[in-house]
Each structure stands twice: as C-alpha cells, then as structure tokens.
Image (cartoon, rainbow, N blue to C red; front, side, top):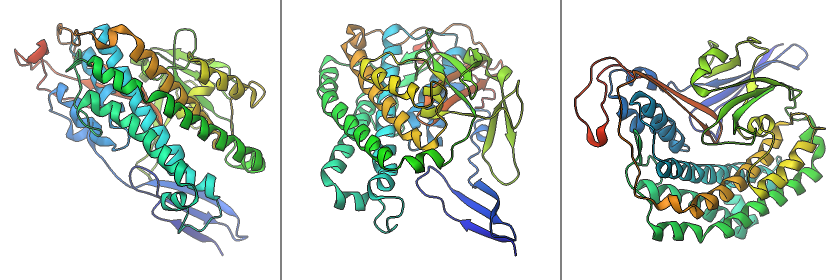
Length: 407
C-alpha cells in the first residue's frame, strides 16, 4: 500500500516548513515535497508606505540576514531618489555586508552544519546539536561563537545593534566610522581567519572520510547564478548577474535592474515557496542554484589571496565544470567566509573608510528602484514602485513617496 511520511517541523531554517514523502506500493519513494508553510505578506502590507521606510521594514523578513534586506532596500531607494552614495558610504555599506556574511556563514557552518559533520549524521538527535558540540569540542565552539560575534560586532558598530540595524539611508549611511572603531575591528581579523581555516581543515578531513556520501547525496546538474565583478571575479555587494549552465557555459550576464527580462517565478499549490527560473530555458529546465555553491560556480576567480587559493581547488573538483554535489555548499561557504574576512581588512585599510562624507543629495523622484545584493543564501532583489504623491522635504534632501511601494 502507498504511504505518506511527514517530517514536521523542519528545523535549522528561518521560518516554518515540513517535508512529505510519498511511497509507492513497493515502499519506494514516488514523490517528495518541501512545504514552506509561513506566509509573510511583506509585498502586500508594504503598499502605501513611504519608500524610505522600506529600509527599516524589510529587514524584519529575516532575523538571520536582516542586513541583506536593509542594504538591498537602501540600494533600491537610491534609485527611487535618484541619488548615488559617496564613495565612503559605499565602502561602509559593503563593510556592514561583510559583517553579515561573516556572522551568517560562521553560524551556518559551525552551529547549524557542525553537529552533523563533527558528531556524524547518525548521532543521537538528543546530542546532535550545539550542546553536543560543546561536550565534544568546547574549544572549537568558543572559537565559532567568537567568530559569529565578530561579524555581529561589525554590524552593531556601524548600525547601533546586531539585528535590524539602523544605518543605511537613501543616498548613503547615517554616520561615519571613527578611526577608533576601525582599529578595534581590525584587531580581530587574524584570529577569526584562523578559525575559518580550522573549519576548512575540518570539512576537508570529513570529505576525505565520507567521499562516497558527498558523491551520492543530492548530486544533480543545474544552472548557477551569482553576482560577479567586471572581470568575472566573485562579488557579494555589487556587480553584474551571471548565469552559467551545468557545463559552465555562460547563459546570461546582465545588470540587476534588468532581472525581470531574464528571471521568472513559478508557484506550486503545496508551498508558499517560489521557484525562480531562467526565462529563456523555461520551467522547470531553467531552474538554477544560488548561494555559495551557485556563486562560486558562476564566478571565475576571487579577488583576495587566501580565498583565491581555495577557489583554485574548487575549480578542480569537477574537472573544471560546476560543482554539483550539494554537500560542497559547506566548502563554498567557508571560502566565502575567508573572502569576507579578507575583504573586511581591505575595506578597513582604505583611508576613505573613515571619511566624513557619507550621504549624497537626492535628485528628482524616479518612481522606481531596484536593489540587488548577494545575501548569504542567494541573490536578493528589492523592487519598489512609487507614485507622484511626494512630500516637499525630508532630512538629507530625500523626497519620499506617499504611494505604493512593494518588494
């Protein structure tokens, strides 16, 4: 007889989800479904809000990556207000984003994936968690906690708090970085780079002992997407969107503002999750992967030395073609973690990072804006529309809309 197995709730995610597995008469898997059960509704209740309010509304979408929504929203509002942030503000926004990547990637690998990797997939669920890690390797857990705390300290130093910071505004940021705060952040980078390297060694050792699992678990061909610099290098804050196919051939490379010309969304009745796909190929053949694995497969190189050294190893894993094994997401995440730490040092070493010019004057209200950024788990777009109803004044010269705005 057919059977249905339900796994609910699915934990270690942001939100609420379950999995249903349908078995056929022979007891084999016929179909399986991942159900996202939580309806957030941000697009709807954002209608009618001032566009500049979106910078503080949308971070509430996620408690793990509020900075990504904060900054993508600010970039969309820049376009709405026809304003370009000064160079110093651009650097400070990217610095906050590096803090987001560090804290999220560090937590994801050590605290979320760590119990499975360090304690084993078959370990008793009662101990396959952070508490079990503390018992097994307290020194590593303390280093991991400090690593995440370092990323969060960057966010709180700039934005006043670790979650839902108040920092970016249309046209820039609301305050400069002091030399004292810059120096304080710089002091922690070497320690946390060492922790990231420990994680890298730990994962590589695990792969060596579990290569059969890596090569058989959720390995499938797909397209891959991520932001890249002009030379094709990995980019997490600002760049062109690149899509490559399962063989690494370029499918598209386009400005984020043109995303609707290239990306569609499919919906299914069993979930609130949406399924993006490449319009030219169509659904479902045009699905693609994002996040660390998608980004490293789409990029050709990384601009910082330690991360680039690992990128060379990455590019050799599948004979030069995109890496398809899902468990290598962890490897890609650690490479990006190293990049974010190195990029943090580069930004802080730039004398312009402590400059006083942190916001630019607004121009004519454009009526539409699109912001794009690489959130820890994938490429994020914010798209706002405004109508002709505007106030005549706003601090820093920005002119808000009274009309509809939506993500």
